[in-house]
Length: 240
Image (cartoon, rainbow, N blue to C red; front, side, top):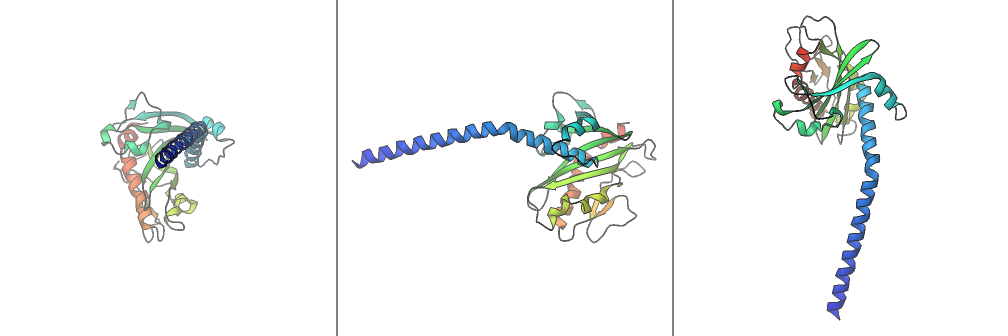
């Protein structure tokens, strides 16, 4: 009697597990298009935000099509690559590769008769990943002869930084000072923006203030910009 009872219990439990697993799989499949759509909307909102364009879920597609004029993949030598859509490149996975093997997304934009390049960035904060987009303004004449060297706007976000400290990287007060900073000096040498603890030099074109109490996350932003943008330096130097 006990054997039959145990067998019944095992069979019943197995059937319940199979039914629940099937229902969860069906739910995940049904929800995936909506999840993918939300991810697409968030990316487009962030790309536009780096261009200082305020968009929402209702008008993001219209504004994205209006301002984003092209998108493509390059390698570390600045040469365009075929076979991949930059919008769906997993930058976290690309950064694990050697620099010369990376697929690097580029977005081009036009706004008020000015030209821009937008670059995605990805890094590590104190408790988890941080990411964002950096837009660079095209300047017709520069002493360095590099046309894309000045930051026009940035947008940063995080997964789990400390509220009130590192989590503040997604706040305007931290992001605004990046505007107008440069990533190449007048000699054409790559000079990533430094996030300075205790206060940046107001006259510096390569320094911004760090977040008080959020030193590790602030340094994570600096390392993220350095690691990601350095991969594009040949592209910046050759793109006119």
